[in-house]
Image (cartoon, rainbow, N blue to C red; front, side, top):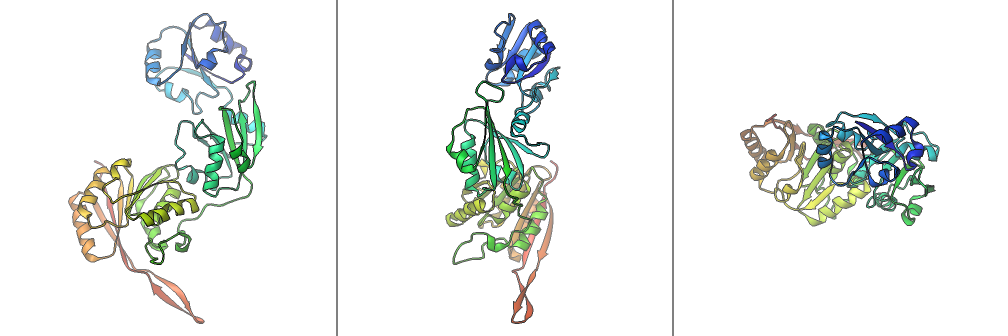
Length: 397
């Protein structure tokens, strides 16, 4: 069974022996657009439409000579990677849409970050691309060039200019350069690729964002996990680039924001019981170029809506520690880590008791940190409030 990549120029872009294979096969499979390129084909045509499970099952039973037509490179966000796991295929790629778009732009693309928003949520897009110099985006009708421009402007990512390539190799091919303002106000054909390129270099924030760069509750400041403690907590969480993270009692969102920058290919879910603090968290997301789910609620209520995490940070338990820890550890994935900040020895004792009874491997770091502060022409040290950082590791089962 052969799978052949094809462009919007149809048979004109295929090698002669590819065309021979198509005309000689008994069954030709492809999207309606692809099949229309071969009106003279006399065998059976099967349209790829809807879910793949029925098509895969059908092709697994197919004994006749079959050719499958797929847009561009079948192994580049295409059907090839899905069907190759179930079928014995010979795959013959065509030029991918991204490669064609960069050729029209006359720009190298070996250093580009490539992301598909086709049929996917744009949630988390900000931290995924932050600081990247060149980005290629596969779009759809919802995540259109206009929507992408509005999204980038919302997060202050205005260092990008855009190039949009539409209907590549088709009759209505069109390729244009835009500012974000221009792209937001323009119209486009449904089939397009967006390329973003930094007009000026903007670097990502390093770990340990200063406290004063977060919007906080006024006049009652201080409801934030301080930079030094935050950094220790993030280290204890052992986040990976694709981690799923919960932040319970997120307040300003400082831990969630730093976690999102580390787990930029994963996802962060935060919950906060105070409406004003949640508003600050949402404002801080925009300010710090992170886009994660943050909801109003008092955990453990509301956690059912979140996917099972690899890591959980608890900044405050709201007085229902036992129930909260039971819920969190029942959802935490094997080998996952739960980190808590605790200020009193009574709460520390309670947390240790619950975590050990739940079968966790528990460790505690007592952090007593002082920071230098100028006083006239001299320097003194000013202590931060001491804190217990409790880390619980869940077993494999």
